[in-house]
Image (tube, rainbow, N blue to C red):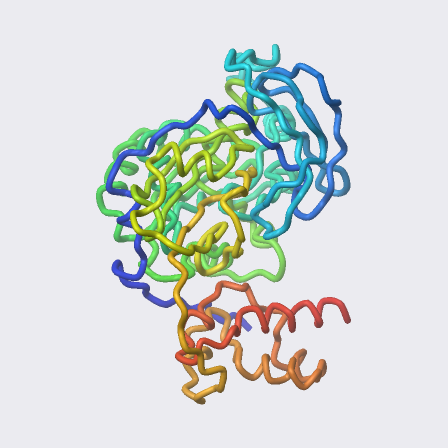
Length: 433
């Protein structure tokens, strides 16, 4: 049975996107050191270099192994200072890194140069995406080439430009100045999966940007804009596919002939295909009440967040204790320190003053968590079943359908950590399965 997922409007006041959109994005591409994480999607990576090696920008320095293997590139040229130095990661853990001292020459790997891409076959496009380490830049970090290895032609490619989570504005900033690359990257994605049409899915409240996109698509009849309601989680892959196709799927959008990629990912695909340029730089939103001048920053992967914050003006005045969120406030991870480094999938860092609030951990029975759940679950009942260690009840309550969007914790007047509880319940179901 098809059940349409639902969404919840989050007001402009609570969305806080205006904080980082007041000014144009800035570039910080000359850090003294970068720390390239040696973990991708919780998978350790094999290192190709040793201490003392001189590396070039774009050189492969490590490889992610396993089912979703992928090369990892140096984001600066310079000397390898250390291997396995631990740094904070967006996963909330400390991970090993390759530390490179920047020589500021930007000496590129010989492979980075314009390519004769006009006649690229589907296989060559997928190969370019793989070789250049392109991953989902909406936060998942899932290898893009794997989405393109489909067994049959797809009906459409959807570019997810919804960016529905509060505070984050990276896609919005990138699209404004790199719309041409987004469209070309989308066309390469469509060719790779033989899709005859494509949609750019964006929230209906982005009126000015929508007009700009439509104007740019005047000569692209196979691509259209699809306006999404201004609600959360409009950026959820299943939500978007349901709205555009009217179809549902179990595991992957390809089941209904769809491939979905993030807007920033499409730009990275364009650069990979046309210039053989690896994913070594990205846009990150640095924002929150703890930042003096919140903004979007285009940075080298491996840059320390503390260096970025210093570069854009530092912390807000009279700031005392703070906490850091890697990613958005709904689905991100709490981080203890600004010594975190930018990895390929980090979309934002939110810096908030630490506040002590009185919590009431008792459920009031208001039912709000069930009302807002996009997939029609009862989060409080799932938590109660988890507390009772009743796995059969957890299964009956369909905890495995949770998308961990964070809405139940967001809406709960008692501030019960429902998202965390349901995620644990989901893990229990999957483990038993």
